[in-house]
Length: 382
Image (cartoon, rainbow, N blue to C red; front, side, top):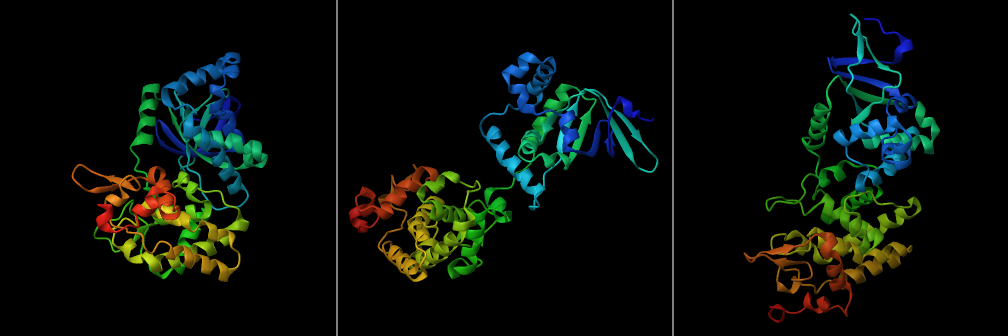
């Protein structure tokens, strides 16, 4: 079969089977094949265009609307794409495009293959729709990104029931890496770099930070997960409100990053010298619990604003000493502060966003009821 270029877009690539084709297009051509999906949720455009209405009808069957986190992700993804254009390291996955129409394919004996998309045919992204919207957004920020090549995976000649099932399978059957593994692999996030510096330069953490597990097992030799250590580095940099970031990237001014790194190393060196034994005893103590560790990171936040190394180290020692009389046992003194007891009598530590503020107050505010509770003698706390 020979394709006539006057009949539509011709894309080079490889035919996987009768209904699937892998190729690449420049972003400018992609925009002609697959318009910004967010436009189908614009009421004015919906009312003004039958074409947009048709796309919206299909999207209702095979996609999610741009709401909540999906909507928020577009801007960050667009910035990422612009960064790649400007030479930053990274990668974007193929965008999976769908057409109910069976498209013509021309496959040659030498293995070269071409697929044709008729003029006016509009494709829907059943996977990678956020990237598609972000590429439209990136072109507004930096028009030259329209000249970048984009990998596409074309699925055609299948009904909408198939497309709906494909959307389900692509979005639910894949196994996403846990937060610890994702953070451990991330070389771009500045707070992850601070976390790695702490591991390298604080002897207590050297080769004892687990970068794979979401939480440590009782048999693990490591003292903390990279997720928990990074969480403490975030609160050191941003204060106790930093717990709200979770595992998400944290905005950080490059000019301040060196101050955060220096403060983190000084703080965690002094902190572990004072309460290292409590951090190691995960079974009986709660110092290494992520929510408690986040609060401990926040205790050192003021060190970021001390540029003089001698003064900063002296303040770090003072702050660490103020925690020397804290009782870290999983006992009733921490009930209602760091967590609660289960019906079976075990102490369950709460999540960072729920309990880190109360733990921080108990560690730092003498007027807080928890301040004396976590320091008083065992018989008085019972």
